[in-house]
Image 1 (tube, rainbow, N blue to C red):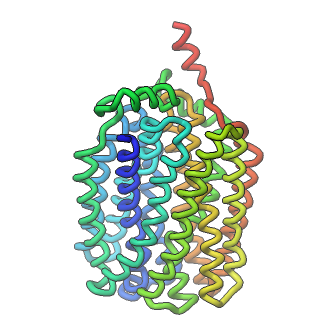
Image 2: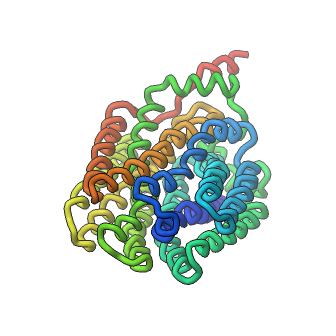
Image 3: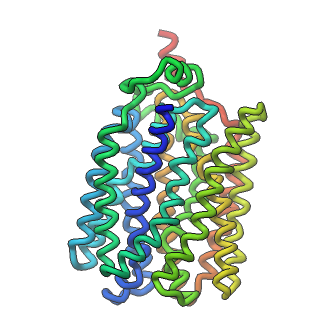
Length: 425
């Protein structure tokens, strides 16, 4: 049972992590009014988190495979807490930009570390639900976080949201510091220890061959690129909604900040439920029933991406309720594809390289956290609406579906030549 408490702890960290990412999205209108920013300029500000977040993914992967998630997440959480609080005390757009860049660097280990820790703590047959816990937390953060931050902004001004999320981050730092341990350092029952050992949980340790050689090897694998490019396409639409959904409701549907906060929560609630039920429980259930694991994961992965195409009809309505229904369908589908994508690095990576593979995927995925806000901002600025921005997202999703179908192949471990060389010694 200890593994499920660890899973919940990891999920809570991602929840708080995403509060810190969305607080700027909620506060964008008062900040834009204060500094007289255009939609294009606001898109650049919204993307600033992704500059350092993406840049640090590859080195974070190397550190994860060398030292593990425990200390990296401890240090990262301390730094991201301080960066969030810094945003609340500084004045001027230059310092706000700097604090967001520091935040991006500090939060860079979050998802790769969650994937790595899940690989340590859960056998393969439980990996779907375990992964969906932390992935669903990213969606659920918008269900409770967006209205909560909107309330804080309404009550205390735009800095109130940053004070609130900064304090919550410090609370998580204390909890993680006290309770997270790797399995080798935890007091496990004999039954749970055997379950992890016999069920295919990832081993702790550095990959044979060294980081550089393993990075070059995984980058040469078609399977890795199929997963990476497919997940990158998912990331574009995800980050469009994460950064611009409140702005879309305020600008195009003419809602107040408080009302947009509640309307934003609906699609993200759907996403949370589909993430857990379909991307987590259903996948594990079908695999346990003896269905081919590759067929199960790839089928549900692709169906989720296809449902994401509902972003296109959402572009062609002026009715807020209809738009939100289409967005809920799109986010619901993308949400249950995401934990499958995040579980795959621990299923296909050569021994000791889950952090490396996860960081490669997250690097390219988070290039979209830069591209989507900027492209959307300038498209809205030049066209006066979100229609073309949503159509672009649909086209990117179609390309991602093709990558999953044509390049990913069978979901099974890749054996590196360095493992064979070590075994021959």
